[in-house]
Amino acid sequence: MNSPNLTRRHLIAALGAGSAFAAMPAWAQGHSMHRGGSHGRGGPRIPAGFGELSGDVIDLTVGSGHRIVEGRRGPGIAVNGSVPGPLIRLREGQNVRLNVTNNLETDTSVHWHGFLLPFHMDGVPGISFPGIKPGQTFTYEFPIRQSGTYWYHSHSGLQEQSGHYGPMIIDPAGAEPVEFDRDYILLLSDFTVLDPHFIMSRLRTGEGYFNRQLSTWTDQYPMSGEERRMWAEMRMMPTDIMDIGAPTYTFLANGRGPTEGMEYLFRAGERVRLRIINGSAQSFFNVRIPGLPMTVIAADGQNVRPVEVDEFQIGTAEIYDVIVTPGDADAYAIVGESMDRSGMALAMLASRPGARAAVPALRDPPLLTMGDMGMNHGSDGMDHSMMDHGAAADAAAGEMDHAAMGHGDPVAPVDTADGAMAGMAMGGMSMDGMMMRDTTLLPPDVAIGPGIDMVSMAPTDKMGDPGLGLRDVPHRVLNYRMLTALEPNRDTREPSRLLELHLTGNMERYMWSFDGRMYSAVSDVPIRFAWNERVRVKLVNNTMMAHPIHLHGMFFELVNGESAAHQPRKNVVIVQPGASAQFDLTANEPGDWAFHCHLMYHMHGGMMQTVTVVGPGGGA
Image (tube, rainbow, N blue to C red; front, side, top):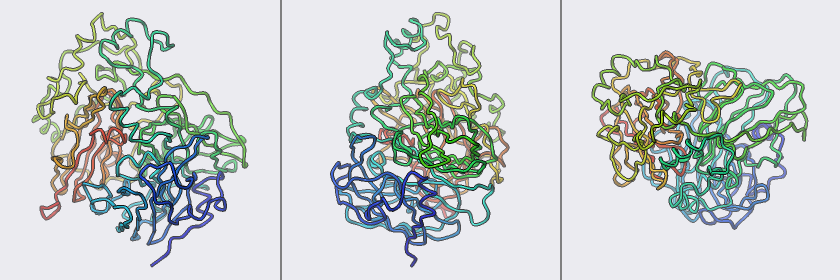
């Protein structure tokens, strides 16, 4: 049995130059910490930053304490005494045993996000195992079948919000496909002084409770009075970009607030790898390094052909690896601006300790458009060549209710390059006349009820949409159509059927669901796949919010215009508001798997489902 290893070289690589191992108390170095409640403010102070563990046997302890970020104190849950928890570094081909001890007063769990493993090791209470009771130790054991950048987090209650997460790196068995001189982790997240259960209760009783950017008659948003009246008639807000923003949230880089000195050292001309993980509970970030282009080399741990961009949007639970080559500047700011532009996570690439670059001001908040309500037949990131999905998909589509596909009466044309439809008057037609809640547009297998308060009239494929707030910036922005798998996909069969799922919700009541059915572990009817079945899944977003949809236990290939052999592999896909997205899936991992929106409060609001893959012998 090998003991966990902790090396200073790896620690510095993981933390950047902003921390020193010597400054961490003993209990932050992998030892047991305070036994406390699920989100308590008592107990020891939990430091930011993380150490590193590796080996065949790794011991983890989950405990509670309090965190102080930017001078504000809030509840905390830590793995091995820090937030984020320790970097776990493994190697492709090894077997690992992870012993997780629960020192909380409530159940906990650890989900290994993006891992290919036996389903009973996936760490989702109610689906793959019962959870870890207080005072108990659960052993996860599985072979490592992949390489890349990943992360782990709790799948119990709302613990992820309080700090129960950490990064993982799996080194490849062979050589890396790209060369780099330095290797850093940037884990973005969100911190609040509030108990997450209080947040959930407020969202349920008043969805806009934490939105400090609501439109008023005296605001500075570029909308006419007529446009404002139309939004009011729909009982919708064009500023409903994120459920929670600053100042409720402070956005973090490796557990540190924007003024708390997160930095990564470099020498001019070096190739620096940044493994960027969105480990937040509820936040999207727009990531850029002013004055420094980024070359994306991996998405969700899977290698892609290098593509150079100046900015990209990273949804909750997504991962992008990038290479940057700093020049002669003293420092460069790494900006993770929240999608609603209420705040930012901040770190520095520094040529020497303490070097700082100018920090750009927050940009103006974006506004939702008619295209974000599924009322757009124009560009808006849509590739019309994507509408022919092959004979098999066409045959499967013949069994679907085409009324749900938005092939009704045409709406007014798009009149801007990004499909924003600046002229929202629509020929004087009132929004009531547009029937934004016309449930007859939905297929018959969608459950109609109080959980649905909006229906997209004509949802289109928006794989080319860079994301809210990035459609009109003057520089290069990543979108899913720019991603190409580096290594050919193993399964290039034509899908045998098309499965359409609708993302549904009632934003005022904070009810979220698939096909109008909120998740219940007791009454759940799973989505079933046959062994080794090749399926195309179409996700239709009938809400005005972007949803990062995550499938456990498997990778899927985005239908983004690439050939079947080079469709990019991911395990999280952002479905833009009022839009659709498609992926191809080979169901070759038997068992029961979680399938859910990775916005934590949406998942707990009901947008979750179980996927069951029947094993080769006919059983899950």
